[in-house]
Length: 458
Image 1 (cartoon, rainbow, N blue to C red):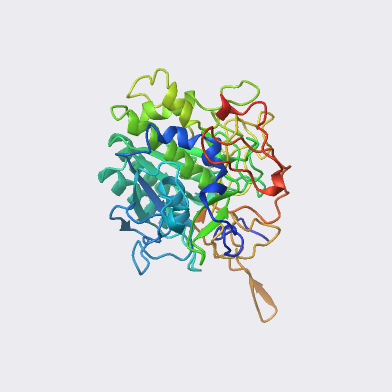
Image 2: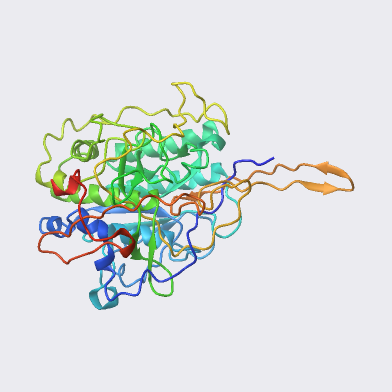
């Protein structure tokens, strides 16, 4: 009997991002989003982004000077500057990497002027399981600390399967989120990478008043791994994401809703740095209103939420930010699905659909997940290498089979795709920013030629 258990999310074996003179030249998402153009107006100065993850390489050349003093909630030895994988470092770099590595040719974050508040939680990388209660408690503690210490944006590229969370666990998380909201912070979290492994609802991304983020590719299609459902509020780039990590080279390529969450958090920082008098609700509303919409014209779909984040449009033509005290996203259910393993088909179910939406292509974006993570633990019954739960083995004693279903709920990072996931069709890539460096996409994608509905070109 295979149970849906959580395993440490991990990507391919640690490897250099690429043999290139410039990591920045490979960061396609920055050019697709017209980052050089936005940086003439703002780089996110004056905004603190809290990154809740599993440890950070504080002395990475692209991150030196970007971190504020953080805090460790993981209950593991070593402190916030220790790590068992490169996930936290990669997320931090996607948000606010300075590019100072490689003699100035390193990796840039989308908001390189923002400051990072590193908050460590137990990501399960050390080999021991972490229960849903522990995972959500630590995340809640980190969210509360971030709000109390000046973070405007709280970025969480972590999650646990909602089916294993108790009412007390949910209450703990929701209390922290409400506290952050009262302090004026915006909480952003990934929705998970298990779309092809049952598409389970995950917390905190599916909780009310948390911005749930999915991932899209270069062609602006929802990635195969990115989960679908009512918990998806926005999507962002999440594939072929080059950035800083803890590999020996210092740089990795990755994918996932983790990376998309970092990009969305950085987008909020850019907008907020220009409109410092706006509330979190207004920043979020403008990001939603200016997002690249689903191609069928829907207000939202389960595949892309309200669309692909476009901070350039939010900066140039933000429109009316609306009321400061009204949360712009329709309420999401606060309770987990009725059954732990089989999402209900009822329209009232909080479990997302396992089928991609017919309007599953937003305006272009991308997604990220570090490649410098350890090898994935084996999974049973074809479970994802990145976002599934470890089945518990039954022990046989004397001829009597005693099934010890000791289920560990492991905190899962949203950083890597299933090795069994089908290869998506080759997207077409985006043109470089006018006046910026020419950034061709990887050779597998062919020469750059923008899709006709490229939202970043408008």
